[in-house]
Amino acid sequence: MRVLGVDPGLTRCGWGVIDGLPGRKAKLVAVGVVRTDPDLPLAQRLLQVADGLTAVLRECLPDAVAVERVFARNDVSTIMGTAQASGIAMMLAAQHGLPVATHTPSEVKAAVTGNGRADKAQVTLMITKILGLAQAPKPADAADGLALAVCHLWRGGPTALAAGQDTAYHADPLASVAGSAGAPTAAQTAWARAAAAARAQPKEWRVPAR
Amino acid sequence: MRVLGVDPGLTRCGWGVIDGLPGRKAKLVAVGVVRTDPDLPLAQRLLQVADGLTAVLRECLPDAVAVERVFARNDVSTIMGTAQASGIAMMLAAQHGLPVATHTPSEVKAAVTGNGRADKAQVTLMITKILGLAQAPKPADAADGLALAVCHLWRGGPTALAAGQDTAYHADPLASVAGSAGAPTAAQTAWARAAAAARAQPKEWRVPAR
Image (cartoon, rainbow over all chains, first blue to last red):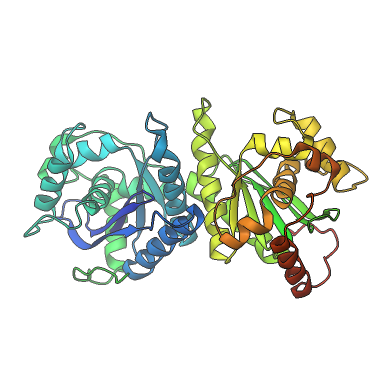
């Protein structure tokens, strides 16, 4: 199963694509950041986000998309742009016929590090280990996109995908740190087998040109 | 000049299209509401908003799009969906090569009724008068889309469009109530003349099929 994780943002929208199946090591496919020009009108910037994510969807052909859930919080200066970018990411995934799940930042941190309040450096370190990378993924912002994808693969993947609904999250830090999804259900196993049979070999690491 | 006004929302996204030029009476082109199914996943609902607005853009061929500006406010239960719908509306306008402006609810109310704190019934009544309609536009939610379009036509139209930037608003309730944009500047006149020359006669009132 190939998962695209999106950390929505207006100035920098981080994304990461991984391949993985329950019980197997996840593998990096591509990672990057869609940047927009702060001097442009808002509508143009949102279009840049849409164009960038559309290119990723077409180039990487994910089976599912995970987007960070945005909350209304104290920092209202950036929340609207983040919400708008997340809405565009979710809409584009649906437009490409893909199931979409959302995960909160603490869910992602817990899944990847075992600690829901881990800092950015810890998340980047664990993502580097989990994916077996020789060095930390760059740009740094994109590590969050990968963390979302890993969280989704381990946490809510097949079951939530089949239902086509937002993913419910069930914490299981031990399984996350071990790099395993734990014992899959019969339905998950069947789903994974079908997905594996239908898919060609994972492509090598590549970053779509912007 | 043809303006599409969008009152963003996830459950009901009101829109209205009008034709008008500085100093002339504005004319209704089409009005409607894009509805989404609350039982569907969020990504699917956002796609329904995008599909509906795309149909309006392609059918009505506006020259500019005005979207209500969304603020972070107390009602957090709906603010995220509204922000996401507004982001999609703005992105689609940019995707169609159209200039986008945003106006606050109080700007729209002031422009249409002369009172920034007018209620929904007053806005609907004035929109009905301004556009010379035999009856109030239906569905009622769509009147807000028309009000946005009227506000944009009278307030920030040509100048802001030329700059391609978000529209600054300058209150002038007298001009709004009179149904006139006041004396146009030389630049506005020139712009309006060019736009009129380039455009065919306005189409009759029609509502694109959903």
